[in-house]
Length: 569
Ligand SMILES: CC(=O)SCCNC(=O)CCNC(=O)[C@H](O)C(C)(C)COP(=O)(O)OP(=O)(O)OC[C@H]1O[C@@H](n2cnc3c(N)ncnc32)[C@H](O)[C@@H]1OP(=O)(O)O
Ligand SMILES: CC(C)C(=O)C(=O)O
Image (tube, rainbow, N blue to C red; front, side):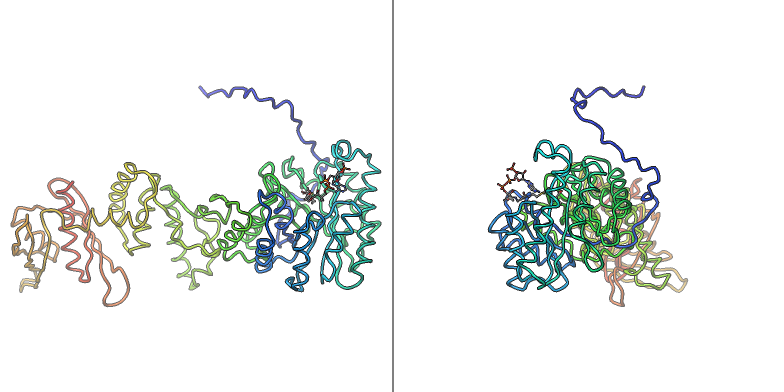
């Protein structure tokens, strides 16, 4: 019988479903994103305002320099009217000439005249700057926070815009490029017709036109709907706004439902031109949408994100240092574990995928790093964000032969035959089950050596000489330590292995070779070689391994290894 779910007992009835948008002819579901939107980083504002310990000027500057270095062109640098630290930081950027010519800084303010004046004052001398004004427009905020009706709420936005223009003229004049951004805060909960009405009224004051854009930013201040609803809202606004060609339609998703990235992506499909967010999703509560994930999602679809994430760990280090908050090891693209497979079937597929990629690239005559990436379980090539393949496959009790043999190949260039992979992974499994935790490459190598490359056991070959007899048979004479005593053993066969097996039979050690493989471990004449022998010894079928500069020596060692392995059990 299928198990029946039980009522949770939690008071879910207190919550209402989000009302959908009536947009039956929506077009966004059938669009695709073919180029990066404009990005605005608000790490230094929304990101900073939500830290346990807000950044000091040094940390803010470190983030600013990082953002510039990796390619962000629009950076919200603070809320200058909020504190002397924020004000001084903006002044420092301008006075130190730290803002490249092609970077536009922006600053946020409430729609309060004194705050607007101070905000504009912070920008004196800036080459390119935007004032970003906001007021909440949602019904609950009109009622509870501001105690205003629709008209009074709209008037706050309109008056605020006038004040921005007045003080910009007074303090900034024509000294640089001055931009304006307006956000109906809590847009996601605002009636669409009212959001439109407020934005239109703001535009009537700002008068956007050629070379005078307005940024209208429609925030999901608290993400409360599924991403498709946000997309509908954005498409509706995009369709209904007048002067659309002069409007940069911007979105500002938060991540309260854990769908901030999806909301941003669907919003771009629905017509948004610009996305505001933070590196690694810092920001109020669950954070702003993560700019790293958005950028790398585009990258993984073959679209240039216009941001350089090639040293993702450096980006993460700076962000962790400045925010004093860790990035989760599971964070898309930048987390420590996101390119790592522990489980057997994943490791197996990755190992095969990497091998196939190399082979396909070689066949196509293209360097592997230029060949179209297609490796199971890895959406992108970790090397492109500065990771190596070292961390891709890691071994614990969930791992199988694929992972173990991958590590032996990666670290020691050993290509274990399939049945040896199976045998050795069982050996490793016994250790991982008993000891728990992760097994490093060194630990796996130690177990491999203890299992196959030790001389512990009844036989060890010390030296050998061989010759081809007149009848074409092969003759081996070998100095062998047999049960603690050095003996010279002689045997014949159709090759060195069968001759050596014949020699061992002379001292009562019965070996039947079932399978054999060998390969060079590196290229060139002086390459070391690995030999693998699967042999039946005393009724047990086991593998032995020999490694030596000389392939014959490696083969004889592999036979001894099988004997010793079988005897030790
Ligand atoms: C969604 C967002 O992230 S918005 C950005 C939020 N970020 C911040 O608030 C960080 C910086 N803020 C601050 O440091 C402070 O809020 C300051 C310095 C700007 C203002 O401080 P205070 O004057 O003490 O006001 P306070 O912070 O309590 O703000 C609430 C007042 O501002 C009003 N208000 C809030 N937002 C706005 C707005 N966008 N436009 C106009 N008035 C606003 C409220 O109605 C309230 O007014 P009341 O006191 O008359 O009831
Ligand atoms: C000021 C606005 C854009 C904001 O931060 C939000 O709504 O989350």
